[in-house]
View 1 (cartoon, rainbow, N blue to C red):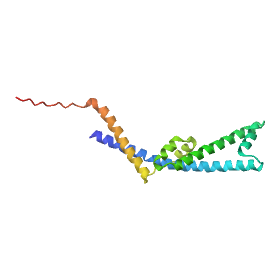
View 2 (cartoon, rainbow, N blue to C red; view 1 turned 90 degrees about the vertical axis):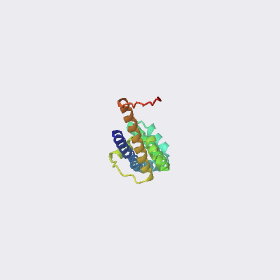
View 3 (cartoon, helix red, strand yellow; view 1 turned 45 degrees about the horizontal axis):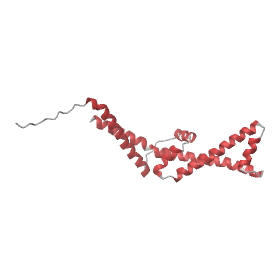
View 4 (tube, rainbow, N blue to C red; view 1 turned 120 degrees about the vertical axis):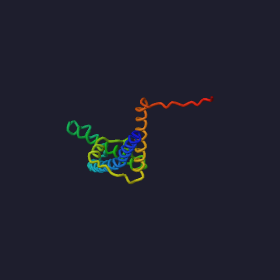
Length: 172
């Protein structure tokens, strides 16, 4: 009886916990899209400024790199970092949008950006999943939680089990 209660508790905890993965993924993707949009604005402005002087983006960055003024050289390194981050996050967003709903959690884990992830977690609010994807995660978490607790309780209680003796019937 105690084993069943423990396993049911594990199943409920597992289902509840894993059910939040699609919701976090959705909130992460919204944060990611916002970051990409903002970085796109900055990069587009840099491209426009470079084009106004007949330069490509790379040529503009090289001008910064070649500068003997330390401020401009540092600013160039900073802008190069912005461009690289924009390209990296844009690629992640494209991968995330192209992924089937059931694998989006895996895509977030694969390309996880700590700044975007921390911001999403800071504002994260648990939600009841009403999509097939969310229900699938509930089921996997429920079954996984049940299985883990069943194995743990079985292993912990094994030394304390009484062995049933087999009754032998002999012919007289």
